[in-house]
Length: 392
Image (cartoon, rainbow, N blue to C red; front, side, top):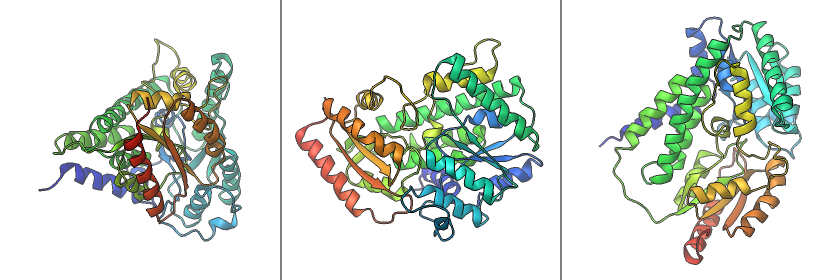
């Protein structure tokens, strides 16, 4: 008997595996003169780009599907893998459909990648998006608005539409609908992980990296409708939260290996850009929708290693999610050489220990191909949690 959810997953998997961005090229053919603008994870305001007629395209490197030959010659070996594979993709012509790339303030490596891009591809628009770390609306909020206005002007010179408040408000409405669909998907996999695995939700969300918002929302809804009809029964797995994978993404098979080890992943920071803002983006009355975007980032942005949290306690947000999602433990999974994540790790682990939350950790790279050791480690962790108790 065919699984309708499986056919939706096949569509999503095909989109995720398409490193040539053929769907982006098809979109450009359907929208003559429109721009496709790539961006490195974690976050840029996608509604802002759609409002000026651009297709936002999230870039996650080459994963395990590309051999790095030329990319290694542009970066030192003791940094994460994603900049090298991204350069390899670009030098191989796989990103030729992009008219520009945004490099948000994630870390020094991504900042340097932006500079490298300008040297390698001077004809392609490239800019650093300096997201605010001061959350005062009159300071960081105003800075955020000015940054978006600057990018809008520069893209307008390359063929984008002028920024219009009505168009941005409409794009924000579409983004809120997508955000609501993702929230329903996340809630569904938390409550019934035997009907929807984290690896499946990952594919459905990641497919949106190259899709218009409304198209992605329809894909999520199609999957939810089909997955809710699945037969299944609860399994005695351990409920875990994954943290640390906010930028470079683990191979899909690694996520599946964790599931096979006896873990139900009920929350994670995979594809954080799609979930960076908690709740809807609220446009108040007649205010400039850019101000609404700014406020959403300042007030409702999710805690992550690349975001300054001031006097707040590292790990407090993670522990709150553990409690609210009835998780029994945390797996800290960070990309090798990821400075933001690995600098946070000792503070987060200390917070988890103080809170009595079982935890374990490992490092990965996007192109790793052996998962048995990690599967055994996760299996031992899940067994220990079953035997000696969950987070209280």
